Length: 165
Length: 258
Image 1 (cartoon, helix red, strand yellow):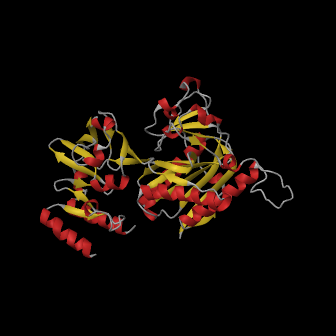
Image 2 (cartoon, chains in turn cyan, blue; image 1 turned 90 degrees about the vertical axis):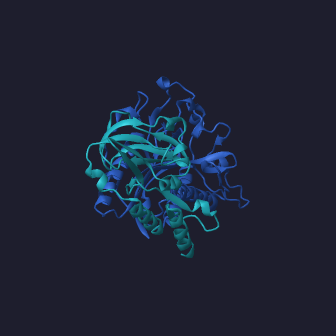
Image 3 (cartoon, one colour; image 1 turned 135 degrees about the horizontal axis):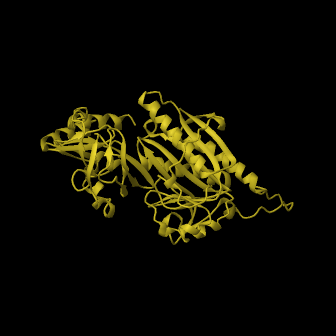
């Protein structure tokens, strides 16, 4: 508990919100204990993020998600031109002999996919919010974004989810 | 303790496509129940398959030592993780359909726990010291892999599973690079124990007398360890309750059906 309070005050000072990965024992280095949650993005409870800029929304999985998955060895993405629907699966990531669905937080048309991920799936681990972006979508329903979580809400959601397990 | 319903078909040899369809329909049902907060039981299917090769999402066809057009058995590309493997009679296949939200939302933990089930079976029943090989999911005895694992997770419901070679004929593994690992072998419990010797009156006892008994012993121990490790209460279900869903035609890579 004391560790978390120290951590929160430190990260508030750094102006980045953090969540703790409670499945790691305290003996691990501190730099591995926190996942990053960025301001300016929206978040789904299935651990995807959305960055809405003008007519296009970029989607990927969060730092919390990539940390739980481990090293990503393969990414399955849709074709541009296809459509995605809110809460529906649009692709998958494979890590440690487990392939997991990735779900779209919003509905719309896929306008671009990150082709770098087929050669370098590890970008999802090393840069989940930037170079590890997965798809770009033209949103079909602006209200989809409103029902997503903001950074503070998502941080709390991750803490509660980790604490419960 | 959490509830787990068990469809126990360990003596049955089931076509891969049928078992795959059962899993998908159970996962779909569980996800619908989860939306309504009514999901209250995990599931385990245990069975044997007719000879079949299966590929995972990232699997390379280069790990097949045959031309797909001329495959010795059916080849399916599935949605699980992991590379190519073979399933066939004499191999016990477990398909746990587990909502990780009720256990630990941690894929590493789940895979290590599945390995632990098999490690305990081998140790307690056969005094075989099995281990993990870092970086290579599965259960190993020396450089022989006895159990392969590959799973799929959808909204934290894990399915596909684990295959343990008991009395499996291992020759079909020679037609592939199993799990994409070139310089190691595949083994079976029968291969490690050797053929049963008949009692010579010196009081030495065989662990098993025939293949069926070996399957029975292994099956019983797998269930016991599985239910203990996951802290499940076991509820047997009738296999007539399993539903078949039409498979996507593109998942079968060869002309044959098994």
